[in-house]
Image (cartoon, rainbow over all chains, first blue to last red; front, side, top):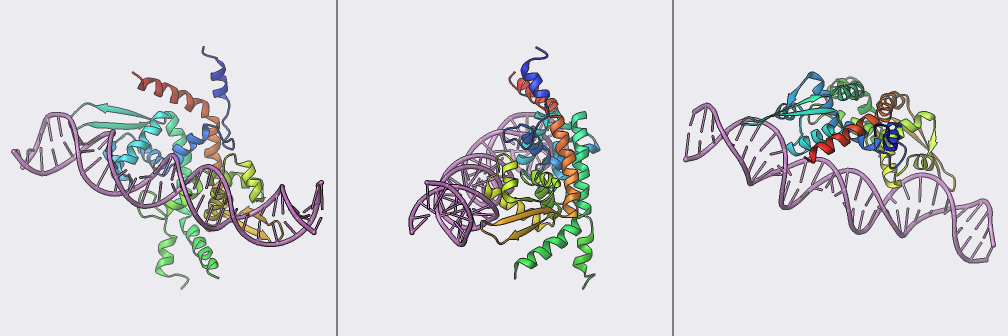
Length: 131
Length: 131
DNA sequence: CTCCAAAACTTACCTTTAGTAAGTACGTAC
DNA sequence: GTACGTACTTACTAAAGGTAAGTTTTGGAG
């Protein structure tokens, strides 16, 4: 059972250009609006729910919970609950999560660094549309 | 006017963790469901609308047009119209677009390569929730 | 000569997802 | 005893995404 047909299929590479390939949902989780920021943030180490919420400007509790569940489901992070009152839940990147987050970080840094350049082009593009 | 306050602010790095920072919309454009695939596809060279549509499984014309407009507006690609009948419109990466697309590609390749690993974890996570 | 196909969109409509705000449980501090 | 903090979930609304059909013009099939 450790080498079933299902296993072998799943070991095959994904193809993002194929409509039904599940790799698309994985990419969506890691590049989603809040998913990418969570992955980057957790590179600093374990953090609890409320910490993450405070550090990511503009996330709602609902979306953060949803995002964390998706990333946990894909095995990018682990969730540890301490049954105290008030509750305490800690999130930590797995090795797999640490691995993707590095690529997400590189992309994010590129965007931050090149924001000025992009904004210039946005303006000249908007201006050219007014003619 | 080439060094106004606005210019100087815009040359500053973006901050993705700040709620109102426009870098967020840039990252969203390049990592959007169809945006990332378009950027990767155009690394092969100039392509026309219908070619892109055919090569990306599942895009609708509406979403593709919208995606291309966003990427053009940010200066990641150029649009060239040939006023023939039927119309012919070609899309080409700019140097800036080629630059981001590289990072998007690395991330996409990681996801494709590690799909099997992620799917395994999805299943064991789903199983653990059933208890 | 008429009808259809093709390309790159746009528009109207419907569905799914995201966002907002309020609710919950429980113990501790004031 | 009233309010507070944590980590959520739920109900509702707003926004985004998806589907399907319409548009324009002309070369080619029949």
